[in-house]
Image: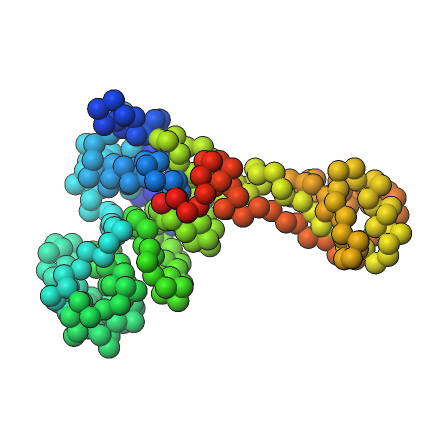
Length: 312
């Protein structure tokens, strides 16, 4: 595998006269979490379908695990795992039987298949429920079983399509922990999610897709800094210091009760150093300072014009 697990250039896809993907460029470093965000109809599922060889592109190039999805589809499928929006478990089988079925179907599994099943049951904390029908599992347990089934064969790239939808907060955080452990083992995760907090917590890089086009890419912090509202908050020990600071920072907002001043800034180190130097030039010293940035909800709304309630 190359240092880039996924490379996408100029990806285009249309259904009749409706353009769904209009020249998408993506690069996902190996061993990281990459999150694709966007409102309903943005083209996320189509992107995943193309990347996982389930759908052919109309234009552009896509390489996954170093293989071209158009000409080396079999090699791509051997390198990836896919967990869809809905747990693909057989409810008539037990958790153990679901895993054993996947082992029997996967030719890449070598050695003792029963040992592989036992290790996955242990890893996903499903030992106690292993012999119970999957129909009795909670939503969180089904998602864990589904992901465990995806791991059979040892894929190095895993596509997770809204893996925590419908889960309670505890189950969601359990899934987050599992995803972090996978990345620590060198697995690459391509994540779509409707929870912006999830992307913020897990992803090293995020791309925002809207109406078939990428409107932003970067780390979570990079994206937050693009949105107006980032500021540095200074707190002073006296009213006189607050007054003096307010005079040297036009456009700042003061909080007299807290003796604090909010100064617009991009939050970067260069601009922060300039603000501190300005205080020093006027012999002023803040008791404390902190940088405040918009969250991903603000970013999403500003970039797409949609609230997070319709983000999927």
